Length: 289
Image (cartoon, rainbow, N blue to C red):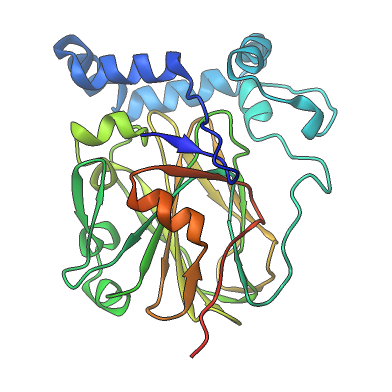
């Protein structure tokens, strides 16, 4: 899928990552290997390896390959690859838009927007999902009918911490166990990705945008989701949690008539183009009644 920034500049993807994923999902031998990679014991071992001190040797190569600007991040020593992967950004490098009528991005990522139609279905790279199967809740799926679905796809070079997009009261976390698959679009044509991924969601009773559902989706292998809070009152821009070890996805469901998504993002999505956004930046505004 083509990807552009907010100025319309085309963003070049990591070709190595795409080639590996294409092999795993499109090649017969790759699919056999994939069946082994998604098993829990492989995930557990991978987690131990990436949290071990010697995994630090991967960090310099990872930075070079993904062209990560380390000037944006805290200047400190990392004790494992996962310690590096969950690195914190320097204060001020992600400005949170505080305007109460502005909807902000919860994370860095590649954003696509979909209407939730009468049958609560949406399409990502030629694979169709129902909101009910994603949430495993008919009641919630019906509630967001005719609303808007936002998909933020994080790749390995993105900042893997995420925030609350408005202030309000947060529900407890609901966890749905699954089998880890990649969230890269290459996989979408081969397997129903989101039906198989481990995911976790909560509902935010927000001050400005009604009931917002926010779901975190784990990725291939470890892809651990770490949310910090249960039921709580939270603030716009407050850190909600982080992903560990690999690229992941965040999904946001918005009620009908609550938000107008920015024109450039909508036009890109209609044309099958993802828009690069940063945590805290404006992506829409409160719809006036």
